Image (cartoon, rainbow, N blue to C red):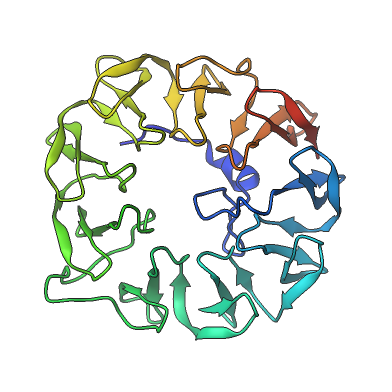
Length: 348
């Protein structure tokens, strides 16, 4: 299933995701620190929600604020800054991730562990991979590459007699609505915070829970289940995505996407070439090869002129525009508000 498949070339730059720092807006982003990374003449700084520069461009990389701190790279060193732009945590990190629930995964000498907001290790570097905490749980991979598991803040494995015998890598590994999507041998199901299997691993494809419903593929069609595993919406959809603001992108009868409500009714007609989840009452949609956003009635807030977009976060959305060049396009990043108006005109 793929209800949204951004071009990897754009994502690598625009979402600014690498093995060193994760920089995509998500539910863990800090809405109380409304600062947004911007790129000016090759250096990153931060603006506020009014589009005013509050931290001067000085960083080689700049991530999102979460728990009042943001990961940045300066002078080839990874560190965390506060809302004043001052360094509050630094070390010999090979890679760092944004904070989540008061903890951040950092890599030291090729091994991942977790620090708190004071910069102290609460789980020593001992994992090959480590992902953000959610609902007091984090997804990690053993140093010998053999095992994936969930741990708690005390570094204890979350496992019970009702846990799956083994689990494989799952990109969407955060807990949501008290459930985490897990897979083993390419069959998907769900566990709760105690590690108990709440939905048997039996689906060939599945999505995480959102708004207490999850899309699962039954035979060759998609439907939705609730957190108990009961079918809420029968498998009537060619493609189905995550609910947000009680709407989900779906295809039922055509090659284009619309949006359904939690009763399964198509409330926004199938008309988009790609469609993403609603955040803050706005959803990214693609028309042809350009992106824009719609409101919950399906009305575009701006013409489809963007080459890539991120979800709305604290009232603003990051957008990418490609300017044709002699050898390769020039990539410019800006921010728009919920009316579709620029708060920060694209810069590079």
